[in-house]
Amino acid sequence: MAEENKQEQSVVPSEYNLDAKWDACLDLGLRRFTYFSLIGGFAGLLLFRSPVTRWASTAFGAGAGLGSAYTECSQKFGGYPGKSTASISETPITKVGED
Image (cartoon, rainbow, N blue to C red; front, side):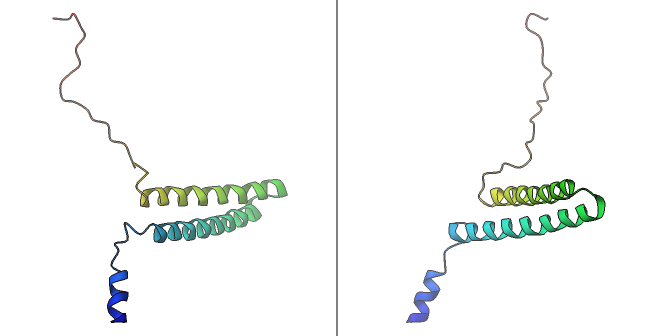
């Protein structure tokens, strides 16, 4: 009987389980922030001599990581429309008063 209750509780589809989406987005954001910061810091060590530009490289990597995580999370929540497709009509546009 206890097994039946466990099975009934876990039947909620993932699209309605907001806690799982928030957890996944938080995890994705933290991972990408960390990884991109490390990549930016390593690139700064290799490419730049000044400490200011090295920190700027690290900050740029962190921003790129957070931006990519935000884009993917907004797609999961359905708020990001994606690429906009322009609708082009087949009929030519005519000027008013032209015969």
